[in-house]
Length: 125
Image 1 (cartoon, one colour):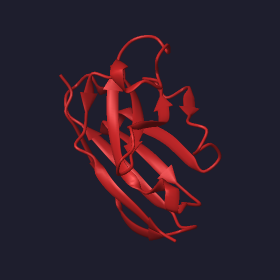
Image 2 (image 1 turned 180 degrees about the vertical axis):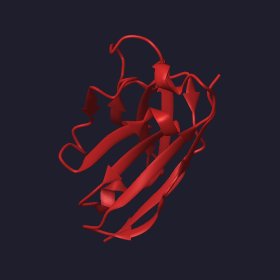
Image 3 (image 1 turned 90 degrees about the horizontal axis):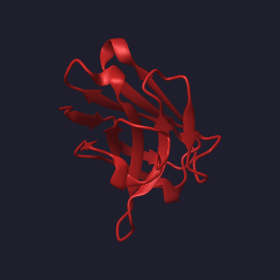
């Protein structure tokens, strides 16, 4: 079992940057692919970014490509999301998630086994 805890959220002006972290418990972090999702008020949870278990491949949602970067440090059991050029529409609760298995369905929240509690990101316009 994996327990996940996000941190790093906060209030930032449009055009600014934030880095989110997701700390994982357990010794098997390196065997899990990881992802970030977000959920704005009144909207469905949206795929943001994905990284394979060894970090060699990444995938992004269309709305964040070129602005966000996902990375991980398996030695520290931690995943990151560097968010640059933030926009008002990036405002949401950001969740990290973990799964095993093939790439198929990486953008679907239903394929993830473990979730963090979320961290709020608010971008002021």
